[in-house]
Length: 305
Image (cartoon, rainbow, N blue to C red; front, top):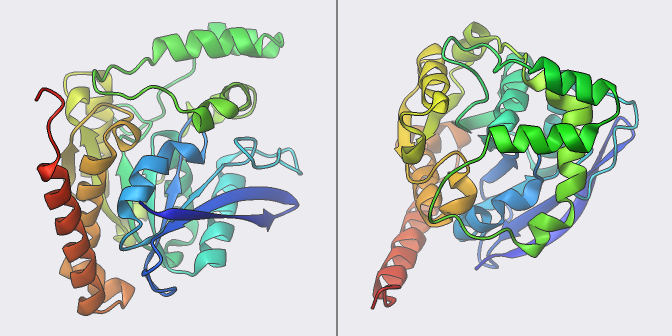
């Protein structure tokens, strides 16, 4: 489901690698959904959900600077302003305004863009923003900062990953595409972004005033964990619905069918049609496509049969 086309976007001398997923029948003016990944991964994190949504949307997953197939920052900058400028460049390339789906640390990049230029985003969906219960950054660990300063980036990465381990019994194994740049992705985050991302405090009031964030997603398996408090706080601070979705912190990757259904539920509403300017006919087509996929999936034999 969903073929993909690779392309690149240049921003301030940095090459940003992108992949677009769309079924052959999707019109070139169909709504664009740009996906912003979190820490220690790249755009392949969204491959599954992108294929699920490709029957009704142009889904663009890009590798943030220093990750995946994208180049290192030409200007040496990995701050959120530079990252938001990359996201803006991608949106402008595929056609603004666009919808945005962001995960974890990627939500902070999205929130920075919404602070500075919300007009180029139709609707944003944030899956478990990387903040604590009062909406402040998660905080850095002094021992990890010491390791990074001493050049022990891989050691710091291993410690960081063990501390944030996700637990979803249905999580699929890492794909070859995801594994290709895993070490580079992780090292880039620890060396270039860790201190920035973990101490970020978004401008909640300004983003809330833009009325652009349509939903905050919370994984069902994150309920009762520290991630729940930060996610609930984000929805409250933004004045938008909190939508519970199957899976844990990486549910957008691990549960692509259910995650795609949640995204359609947000983008398929009448207000989304009005704001994006796309016709009811197009969204009816998206919904029919989704219903056909659901019917086909239900007709398959279960794993236990």
